[in-house]
Length: 235
Figure: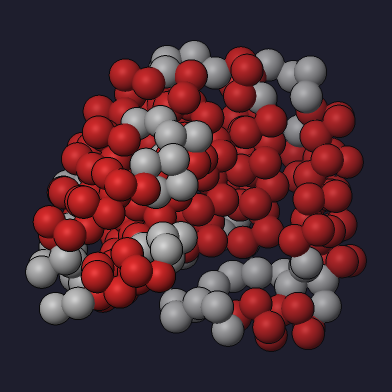
């Protein structure tokens, strides 16, 4: 299995270019570790090598994912997120502990957080909805990325109109958080929930707009009609 990782890294190094590396760093406030490979190429490399590992045991695939995550490279984290999501039909309840460890240990920027949580963790929660209670515990973490993960893990279900009550509970817990990455995370979650529950989200925003930071408020109402957006922004 070590050889697969070596070949992945060789492929990423070959596909890297300075222009992509320079442009990518502009999207982050913190320092990031990356090769400088375009997303489409990372996906291509993911698929190429996944064909070689897809028939391995799930724990072996997870071990490869963790080795990729341990490197700290953005692109390797993307491959780990892809692989772990592509075997979502094989998830079992105990796998949540694996994903929780990954979020706590290896997530150190918004891109890693969103890529892993939107799909891998989100797919797990859809499969085992009772584990949404574990996401609510994440809101009490001192780690900014774990708190953001609590929100963004429900992005895809929110688009489908699912977990509305839980979304409001998670948002309640994060509402006064001063971290802009957390604010944007739950604001984004409310925005996606508004696709299917516009009135409910709008009412939630009106009830909380006095304390909701403008950053999250703008995200939450982005998909609403102009009149709703205007009313929500009035102080």
